[in-house]
Image (cartoon, rainbow, N blue to C red):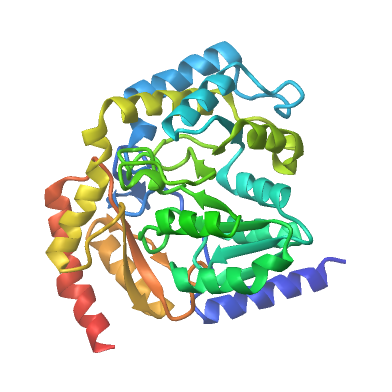
Length: 389
């Protein structure tokens, strides 16, 4: 009975293999701040989103252990049933204060957050405008909403305004969606300017700050890069990157957060986060708030790399090097791995066709000498081949 299903899957896998787009899980032991073990070898990882290395911080680990001892390994149910252990309120208060919002709600992951938030705020009769490079879950939430949706060119304010002029008047409500820090390109959204446009056209701006919190805007995220909070009413983000734990959140006004708590299906029908994850995030926030110079290190390390290669100044810990085709990208990644560096090649559909790339990510714990050695390898063995093609 499963023959046709297996045939379907095998044919799809063969097709992906032929296009160098098949993906495989590789066992990776992240045993240190930047060190990993793969296939019996120790590598220095330059592709992890643990920008502040807090998943290995002694205080963060201790907090997770203590919470497990006190509350157990799991929440046991949805937060609205019995899974709302006492640590949730403390973390939500801390995040709201950090993001200068009235309230906050924690989800099981960033993906779950966007799948729940967007359809709760927009539906048929509404309008959603989304940056073309927005994270997959923002676009997935847009599809689930049933709202009229238009994709605007990356960071193109004129295109946003043209779409608002053409479509806002016919819509009941309008939601503008963008990453704060774009995960594959590392650049920042023009948050202040988008907020101005949103206010002019009575639209609601939502930023996905998964890659911004902890590392830009003095640790507060992309809404704070000017030193003053931009007028962003919906600040979404994750706990799984610079925070070093797991989960997602939305910081907003109290009425909005209360509404999300009662309507977001991915919150209502998902088991609450394990206590250890929440406690770890709280301890991580202690570090970020107490050590702003430490929180600034990932961007500084990224710019050590960009200066060595004469690349554009890094705006975040993420530095892309676009190779073009998937096979050439994988070859470059394999070369770096042979030399002791883990830099995963990023291929379509994660990025547009023809823009496969090496995505370098920098953390506070990376040593300058390792960054210089990595830059030398890229300069001598990746860039010449890229130029030749």
